[in-house]
Image (cartoon, rainbow, N blue to C red; front, side, top):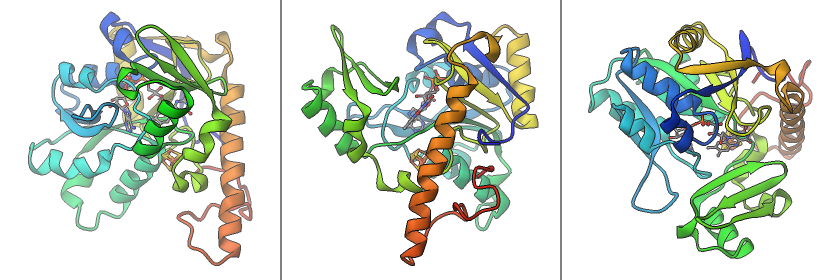
Length: 294
Ligand SMILES: Cc1cc2nc3c(=O)[nH]c(=O)nc-3n(C[C@H](O)[C@H](O)[C@H](O)COP(=O)(O)OP(=O)(O)OC[C@H]3O[C@@H](n4cnc5c(N)ncnc54)[C@H](O)[C@@H]3O)c2cc1C
Ligand code: SF4
């Protein structure tokens, strides 16, 4: 259960050439949101949109495929998407809301739905939560600093960033630079050290790059709502799939990374508990099954 509860896991990618070009990996998030908008399964989605500052995302309510695509791609810093949900309902008047969430944001959203104090009008409007995997995240200034200092590249020239194969990848118009992840570790957000969720276990559908080849995504279909939309999108030819058994490196690598993340975080949680410090989860190495779901 180290990867959470799910109905199905597959390798998948969007069949739309424009989405393939703009997306971070297989374009599952953008592809599913565009499809859900077209089919009126949602009437808008909160995504991490662009801002005036390069690579600093700003949550936005996307109500068309063009707006979904303007927000495609991973920004390795915080985008307070949960904060935007209220605005999406109150100011944009959305009734069926989609949202993309990293694991900590998915926990906040599920908690809000389970204990809707003051947010009852909002909790029941979240129709589709697409989750993305997350090993760690960086404060904006940290990201800017290590990219310009360690890779020696002007931040404004960066066209894409990625984490994979033990490295932080930085793509500019004419070169690809890398920084070993052991050199970026000191820059990550402190709160990430007690985070127990790698594969967004609480989302309707969760996706990430690890486990599948470049240009493809690993996709966990987790809830009934997630299954309905994913199946429809596959049947409509918007998403193509392959069995995880037919791709490399496959599920084994994800299991290893999720286990490593949970084990490391539980050690920090137990250390903090021993010092009498508050920790945000009940999760701990002392649990009966420490690797069970978040
Ligand atoms: C901080 C961070 C760390 C990650 N770490 C891993 C990892 O360790 N392993 C792994 O396999 N995958 C990781 N991912 C996920 C991966 O980078 C892709 O986001 C995911 O595979 C979806 O790709 P896609 O082609 O389906 O999405 P796209 O179609 O490109 O859409 C991406 C969506 O994510 C939204 N988004 C972008 N940045 C953020 C953000 N900072 N916060 C919230 N939403 C955002 C965009 O608005 C867009 O809607 C991480 C993502 C983030 C944001
Ligand atoms: S590692 Fe966890 S706490 Fe940190 S940004 Fe990712 S999901 Fe949130």
